[in-house]
Image (cartoon, rainbow, N blue to C red; front, side, top):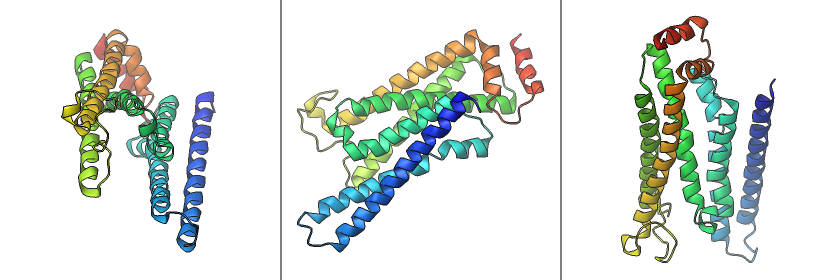
Amino acid sequence: MNFEKTLRNRAFLFIRTALIISIVANLVTLLLLLLNESAGIEPSDVISKRIELILAGIATLLLSFGSDYIEHKERIDIPDILEIVIVLFIYAGIFLSTRFKLYYRFFWWDDLLHLMSGIIIGFIGFIVIYKINYKYSMDISPVLVALFSFSFAVMLGVVWEIFEFSSDVVLGTAMQKWDLLQTEVMLGKAYQGSGLRDTMSDLIVDSIGAFITSTITYVMYKNKKNKTLEEMSKMIKGNNDNSTSKHTDKDK
């Protein structure tokens, strides 16, 4: 087992163990709070916080198995480093953000996560377009590869903003920061409203991250197409030398 695989397994084990411990600890605390009515505190606030942490922990734990599911279902061997980056991003974006209220402590935290999501999802889009190219033996141009990576990342960013808005309307959450003061540091003008500024700043930062990835994939695919195809073909389980040579012959 190589170093990257070992590092990947240890990172996943650590994060999943920490999440399980957190979920169990918050469940026990929640039960004790419900049973002890004479604790001398405001139970509603504490109970809501514990429930939020439990749900965030469960969601993060389930999503940590996403790459395993994709590898098994789609027969794609995702690079170990990319898996580590993805699981750390999920852990920080969902659980740590909820646990330590990072969105409210640091005004730049949300923008950083959206920038990273644009970059990561852009690379996932690159893997998707290669999977399509590999399956149907198409000679896709570098421009279309970059365009697909960019569009894929931006599209998912839009879907996420729709989810945030729907959650705010239906569940009464404040994911789009409708309740922030006009003096908060955000893009845009105060009269535009914090919700609109939050949504647009998220989409802008998503697009910047997607553009970074699409530029990298364009350069990789245009200048080192044979090497890129060879490296990408290793990610497809069951790949053989004939499929690699088939792509190589097209590039000559």
